[in-house]
Amino acid sequence: MSSTASGKNGTWRNWGGNVTARPAREVTPASVDELADAVRKAAEDGLKVKAVGTGHSFTSIAATDGVLIRPHLLTGIRTIDRAAGEVTVEAGTPLKRLNVALAREGLSLTNMGDIMEQTVSGATSTGTHGTGRESGSIAAQITGLELVTADGSLLTCSQKENPEVFAAARTGLGALGIVTAITFAVEPIFLLTAREEPMPFDRVLAEFDQLWAENEHFEFYWFPHTGSTNTKRNNRSAGPEQPVGQLAGWFEDEFLSNGVFQVAQWVGRAAPATIPTIARVSSKALSARTYTDIPFKVFTSPRRVRFVEMEYAVPRAAVTEALRELRTMVERSGLRISFPVEVRTAPADDITLSTASGRDSAYIAVHLVKGAPYHAYFTAAERIFTAYEGRPHWGKVHTRDAEYLDGVYPRFGEFTALRDRLDPDRRFQNAYLRRVLGA
Image 1 (cartoon, rainbow, N blue to C red):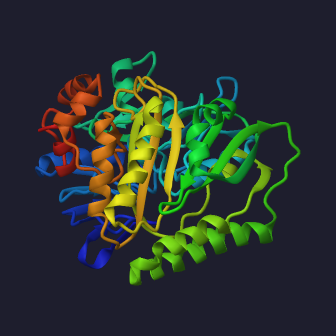
Image 2 (image 1 turned 120 degrees about the vertical axis):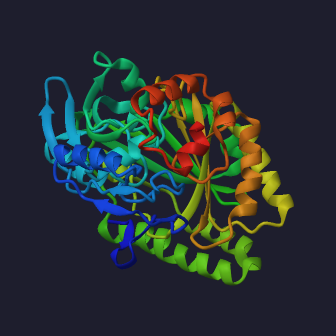
């Protein structure tokens, strides 16, 4: 697991290393009944409860000083319904295992994020997403889910059953209960052709609408201090399969994207003045390539360089303007930014607190290497994003509170009312949820 709990002193740490917690106790239930018992027992002892996946959130959304539930024994596929195109999986299943298991069955999710270390419940509860013109986040592909609520009872929901819970719980922030199983819509496995190529930043901004409209999945990385981006277009393909060769794959994905990149981060931290030069070299190191493979091998890639990240969803129509402001801010600030800025899109969805709820969205993500002081950069970026009524990713660094979020989510009150009903005693509360949802 990529979360680390150094059992000896009972301290839990997240993947990015910026959040720690000391729970009163840890529970690893082997069944839904055991999980429900753990919730009831926590209530008897007056303790709060949080489930934690692989610790890939950069916020303290999973941190608790109460009972920490680790769901890694609740894994695997429960049922496959080929006729309905649905698969039900246990909540602790890592996305990596789900993707591989589905591929073996000749099935796939329609869209996914760019890493697959997280558990299915951790990823969907925080709104993890990839990029897509028509296809939304991982949570938008949920057709049913099951959760243990504050009184230890099991609640199932779908479009037909408890639809008001279904609307909210797909991205439930861990505030409504502990998810125990998720049913996803899946489809027969298909091929994607990925076309990666460098492109000038100004050209990407000028042609953004066209690039978005012409591709099923469009995203790009901009290297601050340069006029360069690396673009990626993924579209369905009739084949044949043409995966990245093993040597080329190792060179581009491991050596350049992880190895050399890590060294560049170390040099940049030791000598910040070198960062603009390193950025110019890095942005030119990646050359164009095209390959065709099954979805998870195209959508996801290994991320071995640890970082801290902030990401905001802005209205899609505002993205180029926001990016121009971000570039101007970096140029004028004297900041030295060694990590590329990632830009993706998602169509509007109907999930109460999804970052794409009710609006076509574009995502702008800023990162810095783990351990680097990120406060000045993230604060300046956040000021730009919030001017566009930006919605922060629930699992990434931000400073927003319930008052702000109520203003950018039309259905915010619907979520908090449901939480009052399902968790009146705030069994699943923690400091983060108190800030973003109110007391």
